[in-house]
Length: 152
Image (cartoon, rainbow, N blue to C red; front, side):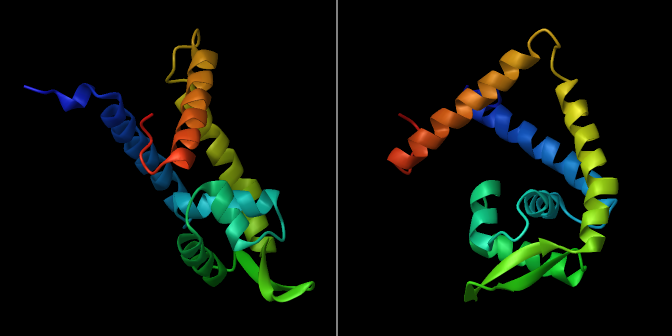
């Protein structure tokens, strides 16, 4: 009988979901979701960015980003402003409330969570693990550009 639970794709997917749930639960303590935190971090690093650029950087589609932004605007954490060079375009900025939340709560929490995850890896191979993740990411990006199926 086939034991699919030993497939790397299954194990990575299951582990990713477990990590995402833990991180999302931490974010919920501050009234946002994990995905919203990634939007906040992106806008923090790229003030005046566009929805399309946020989508590219955090690897979600533009409609998903628009929904996240709508909720963050409603919570007064980010704001949309007209682009002075192109009135059809909107730029995304953190509000003072959003910046304070990011700097005092979200960044420390995310750093702490990242350390927790890093500490679950054997210290002797943590750099190899990071390198392996980067290598997988690079190969999968190349494969997805070549075809819709990421298997070479």
